[in-house]
Length: 128
Image (cartoon, rainbow, N blue to C red; front, top):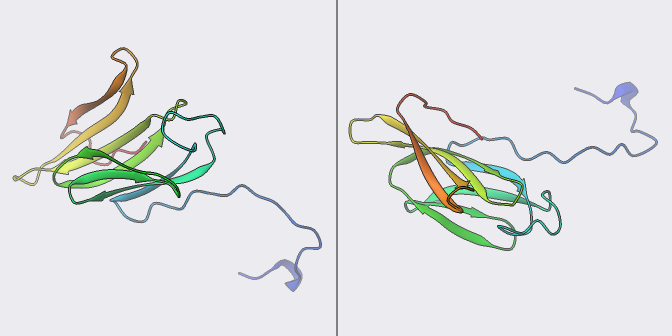
């Protein structure tokens, strides 16, 4: 692909910065605020990274890092945040019989805490 008429533009054209594409099943990126539960500067301050290491589902930005869930055999994950900067993570695990189970880690307002809901083996590629 080449530039139109082989020329650079005479004026800058601004566009939105996009979150990196999901290239690995155990790494995901999402826009978020400055910290968990902190929306004081908005919801698009940092690119947050979610990843799986040493049986931990972790999230981090350029300033802070959290180990959120200790889970064995995670095979994929997907990160998002709610409007209060509570993390929401969809993830799958594989059991000894090679069956994939799906889970959602989310903030339940009725219980006022983060919980994990299991969705069983019916769903194998969850994304949030």
